[in-house]
Amino acid sequence: MAREEPQIIPPELLLRAYRAGIFPMADSRDDPEVYWVEPRMRAILPLYGFHLSHSLAKTLRRDRFRVTCNAAFDAVIDHCAAPRPDAAESWISMRIRDSYRELHARGAAHSIETWQTGADGIERLVGGLYGVGIDRAFCGESMFSRATDASKVALAWLVAALRAGGGELLDCQFTTPHLVSLGAVEMPQAEYLELLRHATQESAQNARARYWGGAASAGVSSVSAPGSGAGAGSLLALGFAALAAAAAAAGSSSSPGNFIAQSLTQTS
Image 1 (spheres, helix red, strand yellow):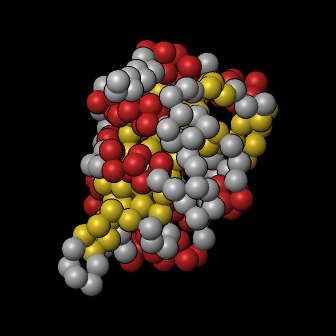
Image 2 (image 1 turned 60 degrees about the horizontal axis):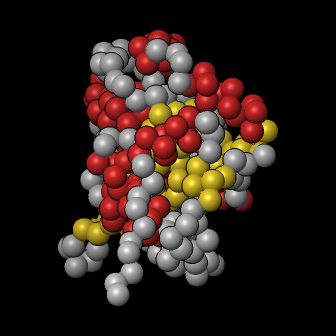
């Protein structure tokens, strides 16, 4: 008899869990069960505390990668779930993978991809990240890299796009040396829940107004703030478009990557 595949986690249940500061994990890729995690200590990456190294700034300015949003969600989550040299098993089970695919189809889970063209002239997916958008909060789930700085570039674009779109909170769940090097900080879960509550209450219009007001005071040329959006997923899309518009308005002769490097350097 064929084994019955476990059902996905209902999207409504997943989103309620995220709003309560809880997220699912599994013990292995083939594990049909999930367990719910509420860390005692929570990691976030402050949107205006991102540490941009000189080498990463150089990579952004040189546009070594093409960066997209929501262009290859399935491929990104599959790469994130694949075995790694330092971790043969993955907490992203097939059930969790399929559950987030459904969230993505409903506009609540999102990916950022980095692409690179090889010597053979073929462009390949070499890095990226995915997560869940709730109002002005983005809960990062996992990232992967197949080329130097590929995932860091994706994260830099995520930070810049959330800032440009009016985002407020970037959740990293747990601290790692890699995330700490990029500016992640740790706090008690109760403090995180207060930040989450605020990020899901303030109007998106006010949040975007704060960003664009700050950009103007920093000397960035005036551009129209993006239109209203229902959640962090909309904010990401708006942020990507806003970055291109702001780069053009600021007279950037190269690309949004150069503009992002400049803006992150000013506040890092």
